[in-house]
Structure formats: C-alpha cells, structure tokens
Length: 272
Image (tube, rainbow, N blue to C red; front, side, top):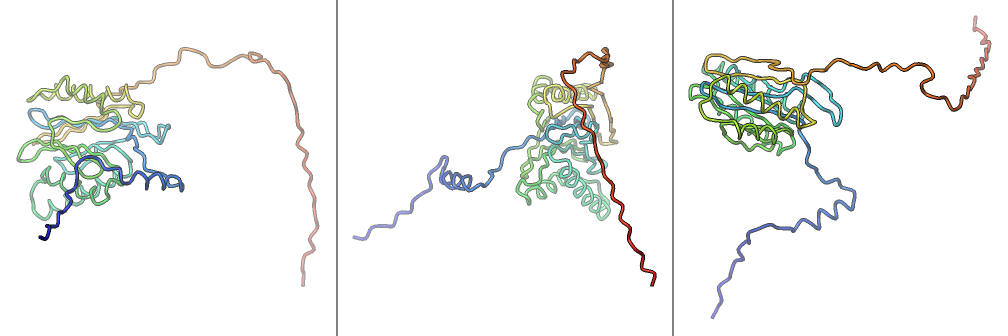
C-alpha cells in the first residue's frame, strides 16, 4: 500500500536561523544596523473644527545642536501639513516631492487635495526605500470629508488616529495626550494640549528643544503660529566670568624663541 506524501507545515513562533550568519558577518567586520534616535518631538490632535499640529525647533547633529529654529512643520497642500522627524534632508525632500505631485493633481483636476491621497503618496514613496529614507511623519489636514490625522513610519506603514506623537520625545508627549485628550475639544483647548505635549518633549528629551511651533488647519483656512511659544528663554548672567591676573598660579614658564633663516638666491635673467 503506497503512503501519501506528507507536506511539512511551517511552525509558528520566532525563528533564529540567521543568528549564526549574523555572528559570522560581525566576525568578518560587517557592522550590523543599529536603531537611531530621531531627536525631535512632533504631535497632532483632532479637535471639533479641524487639526492642530505641533513641533519643536531643535535640529541636532549627534551631540551638537545644529539649528535652534528649524521648521519641522512642512507644507503639503493649502489644507494639508506634515510634521517631520528624522533626517532633516529626508523629511524636507519627501514632503517637497509629494507637495509638487499634489499641486499637479489639483491643477489637472481642479479639485481640493484629499488627506488620504497625501497619506497614500507618502506611504508608497517611503515603502519603495524600505525604511532607508529616515522620515517619520505626522500628517494632518481637513478636506470635504472632515479632519484627518495620520502617523506614517519610515518604512511606509501608517495609522489613522485622533491624536499622535512621534520622535525621541514622543513618550513624554504621549503621556500628556493620554491624560488630557477628549473628543470634540475647542480650539484653545486643543492648542494648549499640543503645546503641553511638545513642551513635555522639550524639557524631558535632549534631542528636542528651543521653541514650540503650531499649525491650525480648518476647512476655511490654515494658520501657522511660528513660534507659538519660546520654551527655552536664555536668562541673564548673574556672575562675572573674568578673573583677575594672578588668580591661577603659574608653576613654570618656558620661552622658546622662533629662529627663522632667509636665503636669497640670485636668478640670472635670460635676455636673449
């Protein structure tokens, strides 16, 4: 009697088949990819009449503050804006590309851009590069279907949410949102909530800092509040940092003379 061929079914759970391969690559000097910090706090919330987006303004280059007033809320369409965290060049380029595409679409169709269209375009653009474009985005806008808010990860996944935070200061900001958010908020309530969320990131995350920018989007207009608040105001100096001569003792002195020698060589001219 012939036996039936049994096909092995794949087992669920984690697989560690590539552990030995990765260890071998590291022994040969291959540097494994590491998680990187975005160094930003961006946030957004839906309120009764629209969307409020917020961001800090600190741009870092490793441990160095490269820019104290970096604009992280980018234009996508008259009714759509996008906060960017990650590499500044990537967020700037991605938002510019999609903004140009939506502008051409509006000119061709004569219709207002939809937020879901911008979200789809950003997702497809980022997914093509498999996360190598470092742009974590918070997309917000208002169209004829109402206010919308999306979070878009660098590898192309997205979530549609009533409130969202991203960046290295997102944990502190999310704590503020979860404690203070409620549906159908008024404008001033929403602005204060986003301001408090960004401030929590500014004062609890070294990668975030400087000012707080807000953008309010409604069906009728968009208002950019830059800066909405200067969170880190430099205070006056109260001490004199000039020290009198002799404050620090000189243990030894050595003077090395610089001797220079100059040699002048006459070069005959060719007069023929």
